[in-house]
Image 1: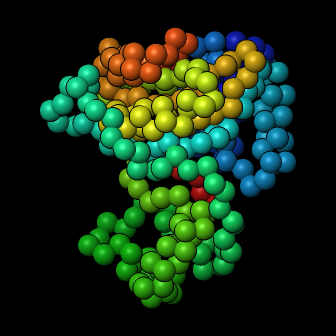
Image 2: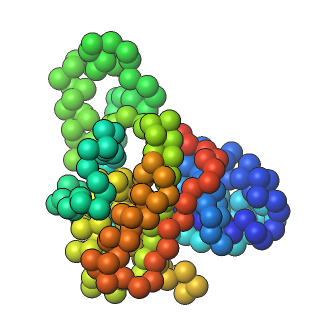
Length: 261
């Protein structure tokens, strides 16, 4: 994740246009904060990422850029309460399904057939009773080989997940707040798991802190309005005894797409 201080350099939308033209930028949001443009950037190498960020900085008139790479994953899963049967303040955090693992996986070997499968899967699945059969036919694989290859890619860390993209605002969750807080390093692993247990939280990470931006635990909280998002955040900070935190609400979706190769 990279963040741009849009108050520096060129205009906000000129900067957004420069950021959004890169295929590796899949999400870009305007948020109410001193750091007001938040975007994700995927690149093949660290050198490529650095070159892209430098190009953005120069073309946009020299805005401040911050990098907040993920250092520990606690949750990457969307499960929103669409029926409104549970009150947010009554929700008990559930065990983290992702485990908060930090161990690095060895890169898996990617073959030409794997790339063909990924290209078929990075768009919309075929609207048919057996979409994977159609994908198998297109790539010349058997259905069994498709599943074996996908399992191997996932086990090797090359395939994160296959899932539906939920448009939160259209689904009634018009308030989307990035919760950030400061915790001692030794408290983050357990606190991160508890925060990830809230159903309103779709993403939860430990991220790099900066001297002038000390926040190190991040979570996306979704709700029908800002009050409901604040209610979840305030319940969490009370339970954890957190003093330094903020909620950066998204005010504009500048780009939202999937990464493609």
